[in-house]
Length: 275
Ligand SMILES: NC(=O)c1ccc[n+]([C@@H]2O[C@H](COP(=O)([O-])OP(=O)(O)OC[C@H]3O[C@@H](n4cnc5c(N)ncnc54)[C@H](O)[C@@H]3O)[C@@H](O)[C@H]2O)c1
Image (cartoon, rainbow, N blue to C red; front, top):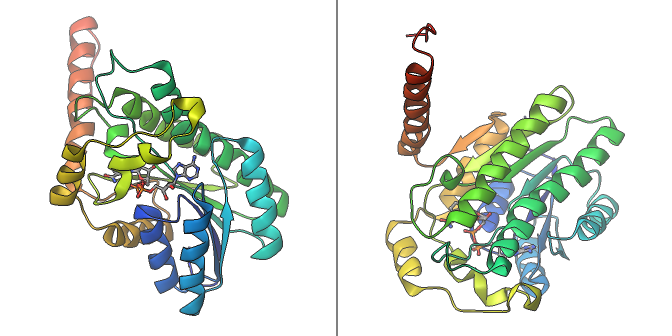
């Protein structure tokens, strides 16, 4: 797909990976971008600074955990920016901690934003793409935590990111002849996600400060969000389903396959597994 001239919407676009995606879209000659974020003020500042550099950029306050909010975002995007071609379902949060000590609210927050945010965005935009008769593209930000479980204390997050990949795979299976789908599966990226709790709504337990150990890990080991943005836009342009940022993450898929294969060999010794 040629990104030049396309109209894109990026949720969680006011910072981190979303911002990196918007920079890469601008470099690829995108026609217009709608920056959607629960932090409406930051989204507006971001759109202003892109507008000053010549990009058609719009901002819209949007909490992706609400399907109505996604409908309003789509109304805004189609009426202000024009018929949308690409949705980046990128907004996400994490509430790390011992999963056995996590409250229901901790885990529901992760599911409402990471999982339902992607479901709402996909459903609302896919319906409009099909109504427009266009092969729109939906790129959802998962994680390498959607391919395996490499770290302790992020079980709820891992479950949501597996869900993001599963949902996109199911939609591709059913609607792949009409629409395009990608899942971005980044390894560690140097963003503010470690402090996502600063903006946690009261209904999910209210704000809290993230662990600085997580910040230090991402600062030391995280890839630059601009680099991730370039990989993401290149992956969508190449119409890839899986978009990796860290090639070593293929080991997560390999380990899972190896374990499952060994289980089949034990449970069905007479079944002729392919070499
Ligand atoms: N940073 C990493 O190491 C990493 C790795 C893999 C995947 N991810 C995923 O990348 C995506 C972006 O995260 P990031 O690392 O750039 O973090 P970030 O905190 O820098 O950016 C996330 C953005 O999403 C916005 N947001 C939060 N809740 C929202 C909601 N309910 N509705 C709309 N916007 C909301 C935030 O205001 C923020 O601007 C997330 O889905 C995250 O899970 C991050």
